[in-house]
Image 1 (cartoon, rainbow, N blue to C red):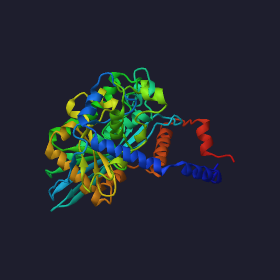
Image 2 (tube, rainbow, N blue to C red; image 1 turned 90 degrees about the vertical axis):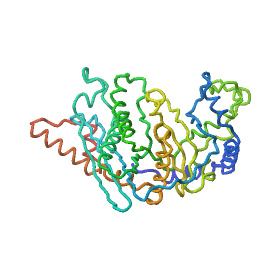
Image 3 (cartoon, rainbow, N blue to C red; image 1 turned 90 degrees about the horizontal axis):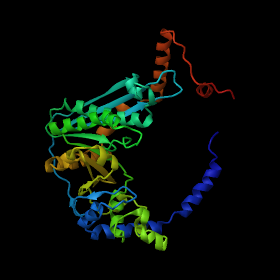
Image 4 (tube, rainbow, N blue to C red; image 1 turned 135 degrees about the vertical axis):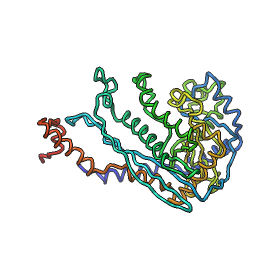
Length: 394
């Protein structure tokens, strides 16, 4: 049944009437004041308190909050290698349990000898060790979340393979989104399973470190609020930042940090960064990184940068941040890419185009599967629910 647009239109009008621009402006002004006056060392001290338990994800400032870095110069001859991924996820209605991961890559070379190489690597996963977490007992089938983890691993491995072909000394390996592998902090996963998934990813990062090819990820129009949340820590009057025992909330019914939330980091920094400028470095305190990225060099740091028209978020491993030359290269080439791509890196656009699995391709994979099963004289049995969707009766 199609959407009831008349009812939805009324609800949209009600939603927009409830939005308060004045409240948003007040939050932004309060956050700016905190950002410009708050001491980073004070925030670090509060966050290092072993009794502190903020209820939200908090960035850890490694530099004074007001640090700004202008756009560094870069060579005319450079190379950007990017990867992206797409998947056909397991379908419990399918006669065979499988999934497909397609990792696309783009190698764009600029300068005196410009060049472009585009391609993809497609793999079908169907063995027991690929589709079950515990293949020996064939329990806990791998679901969408863990397929997404495997896709992140595949993208990183594809990025490493693509860097083997580059000869330009000034290169950047770039990924869309985040360098953090989500989905591994589930309490249902054993340490063995985490190692099985995360090990190859960390190995790929280490290979890039040994090749001295800086790797970074770029997030356009980020929705994160880790900087804002650090400012909330600074506003907390309690001896220890323990949100579940907030004294101000208990006494007045309102958190002491309420004047600056909700607000995204990009809105706070939008008027503070000039075109091409970046912020100082922040350490990500995401639980999955703190628990499962064992090597200090592989901790994930981030900064925000004005790419012209919007504030983007860039994530890098610690080993990139520790090398001023590599960090400047990331800063310069990310901005250069965004300028060339009218706001978004063309290397990531091309990698995505190579990775995407169109609906027609997905249907063709099903047809190829059914044809292959028919050759083996295997009857294709689908659920009645799936059949009803394919053969509408009304």
